[in-house]
Length: 457
Ligand SMILES: Cc1cc2nc3c(=O)[nH]c(=O)nc-3n(C[C@H](O)[C@H](O)[C@H](O)COP(=O)(O)OP(=O)(O)OC[C@H]3O[C@@H](n4cnc5c(N)ncnc54)[C@H](O)[C@@H]3O)c2cc1C
Image 1 (tube, protein in one colour):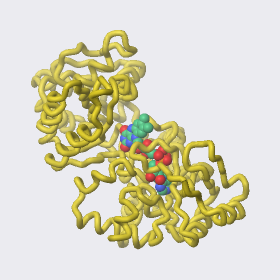
Image 2 (image 1 turned 90 degrees about the vertical axis):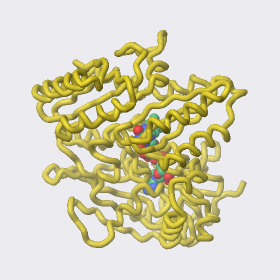
Image 3 (image 1 turned 60 degrees about the vertical axis):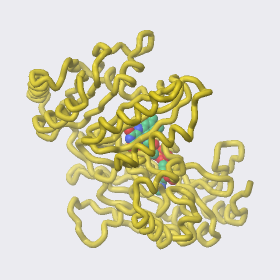
Image 4 (image 1 turned 30 degrees about the horizontal axis):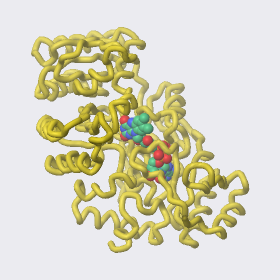
């Protein structure tokens, strides 16, 4: 296997010192990781690598689910872990200026200390970095209310492949002065530039949380329920998570660690949450709205949390996705389809899985965001056919005009499927941007597109 350019490594050592270059061939890839401590050092690293055509892979917490952080033997890792400071929390303007290597949970807790909310939350919060969240445009559990990471960013600092630093640490909510450059880099998975700092938009810290688990009989009632709650909770609905029985009944099965808050046997289980400003009146309103949904027949049964402990227990059921790996050999998918076609989409996937000998088909997701996580596999390894499962799932997504990646990005793992969700003209424009910003293709090559496709574009 080829290795990074030795002369480049020496130049990087000269620039960053011993602390800034880690070389460990026994560790997981990449063997060589540079750890700049400032934007100027990131710029210096990129200048050296660009001059030599040395490829780099930007690294955050390495929790990404699409393989965007994977590296080959001849690539160098560029870790932002030493750039982890929270530089400022501006309470007046409700912004946080943060370095890209800051762990998400640290940023969230720092905001909370100032009575403010950074509304990004998901299972990997303790390891993922703000830079990685930005580079993947992460979603999470509150997208229905606050949007994806893209919607939480006001300004960005990025270092381009040739070392040019673009500092655009805007704090203004409105700033329509030409192209909004930050959006080129958010969700670009480190292929267009290295994110070094960001200005994040903060919100008031909610004073009340109201959470319930609801049993719903039909999918059309699930859609009606979403609209019912949205229309009656004055913009405070922050989560609408749906578990199909295949998920809920497995995670709350007898003998496993979660007691089912609602009995098995319903069509769907919906975890809803509102975040508000007045604990007393918000709780009363929440109960009243759910009571109305029960009367309308949209909800068959409900458990409303009365304590933080009960709330955590509900979220633990929804978040216990790793337990699914005990079902057998499986593949996890993260897709989107519009709500009006979702029931038919699921029925079609299910029918194709039912036709197999030994199927595993489990579905749950951020339904308020039209985002489903679909788990396909077999309970017996002999019946696990990777290509067939890929064909079933992505073929159906394409027929339903869905997206092959709702929130996890493309990386290397979904590169082949990308053309199912993007037109040839869209892909050509994207590769043109890549060629313009990184003509030597040193930044995370072979992610999103193959190097051959980029050079041919
Ligand atoms: C248990 C679990 C639950 C999850 N749940 C959700 C969820 O509900 N919703 C959701 O959207 N996602 C979810 N994810 C995925 C999550 O969004 C990503 O794991 C996370 O955002 C990546 O952050 P990271 O720091 O680990 O980045 P890495 O994994 O290190 O990198 C991810 C990509 O970003 C690039 N990158 C990293 N840092 C930079 C930088 N500073 N500049 C430029 N490029 C950079 C890398 O090259 C790579 O392409 C989950 C992941 C796990 C493990």
